[in-house]
Image (cartoon, rainbow over all chains, first blue to last red; front, side):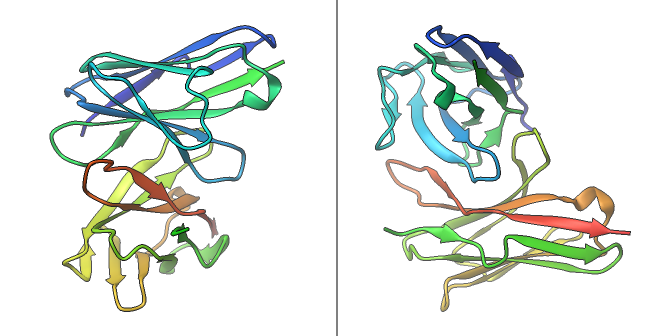
Length: 114
Length: 113
């Protein structure tokens, strides 16, 4: 099946710094990538949808200037959490879809902001 | 607003028994439903999907049932194994411009020996 990777798998940073998370589709071209956030014991909440070469579409309540998304190629999307604060600590998961609608999920990135 | 939700937050099943995880959805425009399994600290793993023009679909040890009349979705796992212990999410998908998944709240399946 299609494989999606994320890097890093976990990151700890100081409050006020920025963190970049990469999402890669390893064996297929992802025309669309999605970024989700998941707090402990909660469901996945969609943050934004990005299509290769165009600006991301953010869900209501998600600050686009705080969560910068770049989808520069058909195999790579990045999420940058700018000026991170402790409340940004969460599990960030990306997914990718190609020609078909099925979304394939990455393993997630655990972010802890101190 | 419309949402996808689950009836049971936790389900405890003895090894070898069958498991049934339920999900209610409210958006009649949804035309595609997916069940995901999520183990602790990992991303969701696709289990099985079903389109709105079907009412049943079978996979390996899993069956998904869709009842559009009452907007209900279920996942049946036959001969539940310890490795099935995880959180299970149903998700609905509405094809169109947005084409985005909406996840339910999740059910934790605990398999006891």
